[in-house]
Amino acid sequence: MLVARPVDPSLPLVERLYAARHASVGERDVSLGRLLPPDQLPDIDRAAERIARAVQADERMVVVGDFDADGATAVAVSLLLLQGFGATRVSYLVPDRFRFGYGLSPEIAALAVADQPGLLITVDNGVSSIDGVRVANAAGVDVIVTDHHLPAAELPAACAVVNPVLAGSTFASPALAGVGVVYYTLARVRQVLRGAGWFENRVEPNVAAVLDLVALGTVADVVPLDFNNRVLVAQGLKRIRAGRCRPGILALLSVARRDHRRLTAEDLGFAVGPRLNAAGRLDDMSVGIQCLLAADQEAAHALTLKLDALNRERRDLQASMVATAEQHAAIVTADPDVVGVCVYEPDWHQGVVGLVAGKLKEKLHKPVIAFARTDAGSSQLKGSARSIPGLHIRDVLDSIAARRPGLIKRFGGHAMAAGLEIDERFLKTFANAFDTAVRAVATEEQLTRVLLTDGSLTAQERNLEVARELRDAGPWGQGFPEPLFTGEFEVISQRVVGTGHLKLLLGSDDQVLDAIAFNQEPVAGKRVLAAYRLSENAYQGQTTLQLMVEHLSSLP
Image (cartoon, helix red, strand yellow):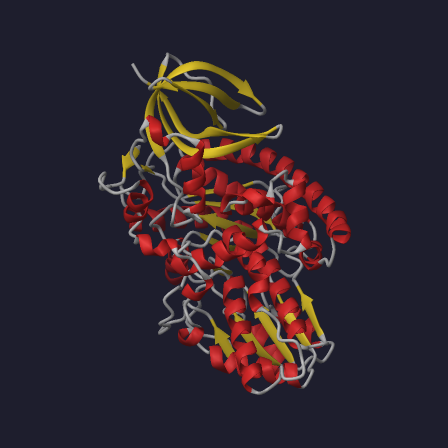
């Protein structure tokens, strides 16, 4: 269902788009000075002081990350800044998702303390790692947790837990990604070191130099782009467009055939992020981290080729798994009352089930959990959950755990995505409990697919200059969606290209407009209603306007 946002037509285009997103035109100023100060982040000073002491004493430090793009960029930011501060004994450890699972588990903590570090720093994980922190503490190793996931009732006994969503936090941007949290933490470390005179005989690093990585991790983790996150992303995009970024990011953009000079947040989310994530899904995220840390284009290029090959393998796996999942879902949703959907196949790859759940959620517009075995022949299942706007999936899992103790072995996550583990013999019981829990909280409005639009454009507004103005008025993304317009058009021509995409020429008000609709079958009739975005299409040295069609339906 297309629903137009309320707009004031008297306002200039960008102003009315901002107003429709409950933002003021003053928020177009995304200069670095607009960033929130770190003061209100929980435990920020305690964490910064402990890390500063470790730098000054040249303690051995281990950064424990996560196996997604947010975790990989957070690890890279940590190593680059800590080494820039003067630390010489810093290493990282990322759990193999297939052997250890997520976070600072007791097994990972034991590996981390084997080299007798003085300090462990978790990035994009740790807030639920009570047992892992206990193992580190027992070995005499301090732990600093930097995370953005929702905490359980008990916090780990770390030296500090820096997390904007802790109870009582007054930090005004709870939507920070994991890489954003560690960026803030290390920016504060620099302040502490500066105050101690640490840089009097050393080069003081510019922490803004890693904002390309912060932007990538923030967009790839699909956190809401509130104003503070938009500043972080905009500053990172600015650096990448100017070529002042990590060689690995330029190499990833090159293999994805994206021009860094015209980079958008969408390019980070759909071209760079998936290639980086492919390492953690199918292999070892250290490949992705090495790419981000590569000092030159030659080293980065070789690693990028490996990431690109993994991403192609991931796409093939995903396509096969989604096709099977759709068959399972068709059986489950034959009952129209079912609103919480669980799917499972014994041979599914556990690194890809999150993408399967996401694709199925988009098709059904219902919360979905896709399960895979933890190992071949194992009775333990790992599930990846994806939700619809307004329905908090972690709260749903929490309610099941409270009502049915023992049904879920462990879980954690966000409002829109979560992970869990159950025993295979409880799958049917859990599926019923999940559907019941979703039905208890889901509203009819949440279960209705709505495409919010920004009204229509005049013929004078449908041009390349306006497309560029809108691009530069971003960054757009989760929670601050890219402008989407509607219009009625005459279909001049249409043809299927690639793997089921529809290439069109559309006519309106004496204009002929190039358009493309992905995963769209040809439409009947000569007139259509289209919901579209303005975009630039660069081809053979020429840049032209192209409509990116999100919705297409025939008109009588």
